[in-house]
Image 1 (cartoon, rainbow, N blue to C red):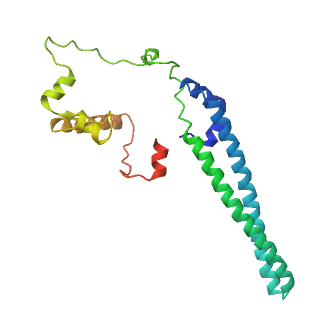
Image 2: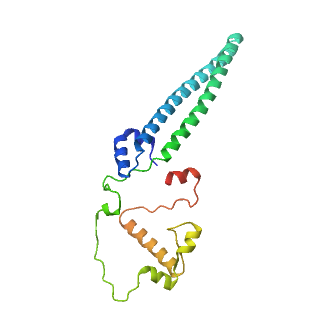
Image 3: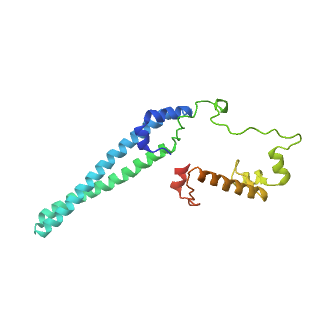
Length: 212
């Protein structure tokens, strides 16, 4: 998810990137997000100012009481109560403004990398790098989907029932092969200078939104 600070500092870049994704409502979403952020900022400033005034009033009350000026302290208490009520109202408004902004940001997708070509289908993709040559298979060689069925190593239907399309269940040698491939590519990534990270398996709602 894009941060509002990034959108504010890179508005044209964000709009250009979203145009590549053919998001027609991008200009309206960006303008709405910025307007809501302006509102949130103004509320935050007023809230901070009101809180500061309330703190000053509280200190003044203590000072007046210590000096025996109870009548003036009573007047200050009334002013402090008004400031406290205003702070509560501003806190509620600030919470609603932040939630409204967050809801708009949830609907703004990430922008593609600058190198990603504009296009409408996979036909517009381009090859960035190619390694090795495609092998020529011998006559009678079976495609991978038939090998999977013959050796019963991946169950697409069960995965579809559990999670949805694109998440198969790996079985027996298929599970071992999947695990071996993961380890192989982790080792290759480490050789290339990357550091392996194992995050928590369980996430909270905010983390789920943040990672898509």
